[in-house]
Length: 180
Image 1: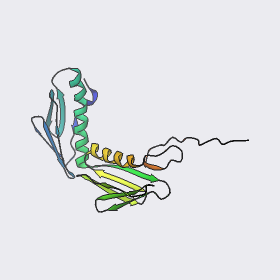
Image 2: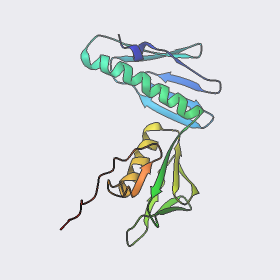
Image 3: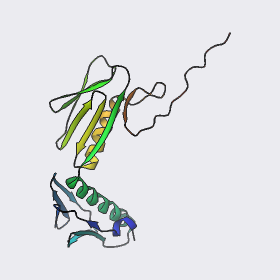
């Protein structure tokens, strides 16, 4: 049996989980999320604890057992605490600004790059070189942060670009030079 799948998810105060067939709805102080479980996976809620069970020992069902439990756990954490990803712009003249709900990046192109915030995601720019992506859906926060990073990923020679705050960029040596 899956070690992750059989671990119950405890609900913090203020979080409510409703199961209707295969649809799991999670409501909390920060918002609400919904997930539809796959066939062969059953979700039950009793006394503030969510348990995920599987119908059989098929390979695909075993794989979905732990996945479903992790997704429900991420939803519970998201509606109670929320998720955030921090990025930093490294390079001379590289900066970010907030224009309403849009993020404007100036990262060495001839034009600024504008990124719209999808539904449920907010941007914060506490410093011109620091970007924080905030939301309740862990997957969406990570995807939006990856899209921002993809505008100008860090390059290995000078390290310029947009990177995650905790990301380590492997640096390469430049040309050795000619000694004649």
